Image (cartoon, rainbow, N blue to C red; front, side, top):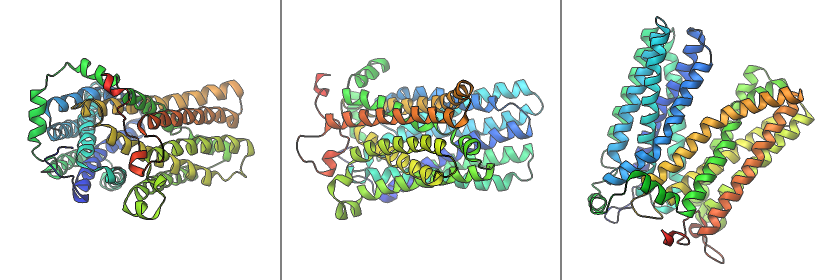
Length: 456
């Protein structure tokens, strides 16, 4: 954080959360609404939207390069605004491509490839620099609550956009689709730009330092970050934990239907139960790390390390519960099991994000964007692979063993083991940071120690 600028308060945090909500508003239209139109209204194979969404995940390998660009310039706001402009253009172009598919399928698909390329690039630029700005302008004591506020606002952006767009799209027509997607994209850009005004500050000192320092090439800067033991370990932790987290997305509802006999409506409600648990887990971490938690709870409950490791272990235990549930059958309390899984997922993920914010500025100076981009790329790749691997593994397991319960159980067991590995990785990062003996809550969090970093 710049020494010349005081940390932002809750109003500034909420404004950055509004930017994240705007980002989510555009994304939810491209990954859900356009997905449905392609499959239902146009009768295209579900593989097409799946590949397009996969493309925008693949392109997020650009996150480290985008973060490096903001490190070199010493400013994050231009990258966020530029990224949001690219994302908004991509969102509207994607809608135009879907409309075009109705009259010229191949031309529409070609335009959709271009549109989802813009979406991936826009998310990489805006999302990476937004997290860096949040990390640099929020003080340490507020990072866990701030991360929760930002992510809850993003979820709210998903929900509000999906609800409002759903109302405006009925009765469906191509013109309505263009109008709704264009309106949401334009509004997201305008609102996010206004929300950013004055949040970063002038940051002249950081810009001058960035200009005075010798600027290594991107690959050299990335190699410097990768050489930091804690940054490297945290990258691997993010990949493993998010792979386990995302692998369950596409198989939980089919598991409930095939093994427990849930109807489509019941399995959709089960997904809602899981998301409710995620929200509760996020709020629990925010409260424990906030002023009320520091006042009323033991110091250990303010440790991001505790929440990250514990959340991974409980997530693994909840997945093991699904394995047992598949064997027991309908007597198993599936809803409670899934709610616990969601709460543990929410707790570890928000603690990991808060840790990411803290660690971004530790290590070699003016590498915050490159560091955050590396972690963001690791997360995006894991998300892109997780759903595909989970669904494929369940199909292969069903073919090999025949029984749906046993097949899904094998996949859930593999995910549980991944969470155990992730917990061990998080513990190792924490051990590298924590001082000997009893630690206060701030000291026990996932900080990067000087150990190993002085060798750079």
